[in-house]
Length: 434
Ligand SMILES: NC(=O)c1ccc[n+]([C@@H]2O[C@H](COP(=O)([O-])OP(=O)(O)OC[C@H]3O[C@@H](n4cnc5c(N)ncnc54)[C@H](O)[C@@H]3O)[C@@H](O)[C@H]2O)c1
Image (cartoon, rainbow, N blue to C red; front, side, top):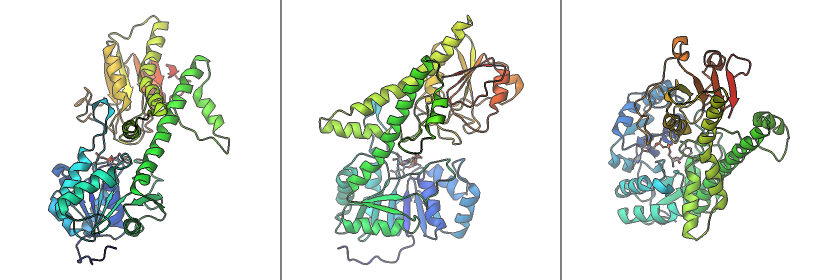
């Protein structure tokens, strides 16, 4: 049992990694009256938060300003201040390296930063999505080696997966059940006590490994089902059947069916990435993840399928794509957010460019393409006006943002490829579902 009493400290919790997950979590704790420290190595991000400017379109700056004025939230880039908190929650990125191997450099780096400031009685909870064993093995070892303390004896260690759904106004921190696994039962109970202050339903599981597997299972389920509807879309389309009409009718079945929707592929920091954390871990055990690999092949083939839809339509009317101007609608990976990580819109833009098209985009959520792994950083969204829209031979709708006037788009541009089923079919344009 961890008996050493905690000295009274300034903060109940420190959130490490102030990104899409960390900022709403920090606000949630602070709103619940917990004294909250927010820590990030990115000093620009920290300054922005200190000035009350939300980095994300779906998080209100007004909320942030109120909480900062209350003094319940303090953003910092000084790691030593972590020692001032009773608990540390880690939400740093877990991307993929080239060839789809896990990149745990942020998780390892953060453990090294925390270790010198770890105190007896502290709780450290990892929330970053990762393969089973990360918390118990590598994260724990770095914390122990850097601090001289032992998990389960001197400090508490837990894994609790994040279920943040950016842009979904119905999804609130308090009403999202929270899965928690501890290094020991006592670690899990301490984490339950902390999260219980801001979340109504805690779902305890037997270990950190199980909690890590829960997160991967949720996202793999989504990845595979999206691949399934994407494949069905290609089959039904060749049979002259509209997949959207099929799904609309199928989802009236009150049991045994859950709708997933086709699109241009899979984007964001979670769904296209997390499945490969498991395939990598499974390879260590000499197990092939055939289902996940197959889903990956299908999802990765979708941008080409969409562009082929445009090429076919142009061919039918005796046109070529080479030399034409094409407008891509939406570069965020999903509607209503500014997150363009792993967005398949960029793959589509690359394919169009490779076919000789001149490509522009429209997205009010991403007015300027930030630095990314593709070739489009620094490009600006076009202004939405008749004069601009008339310049395009075709448009491709990749993201179903609800602030786009799709009727006007199809009134101004002669050919629209719609991967999201949002463009009305009774306009002037030839509209193709792809
Ligand atoms: N974005 C989502 O919707 C979502 C949903 C569920 C789970 N997750 C998982 O949550 C984790 C975080 O994702 P995110 O989208 O918030 O990432 P993000 O890139 O938006 O934010 C991560 C933040 O961590 C900071 N950071 C990186 N290394 C650091 C270090 N050593 N010390 C302190 N700060 C550091 C970065 O500067 C950045 O501000 C990932 O594992 C992701 O898979 C994300």
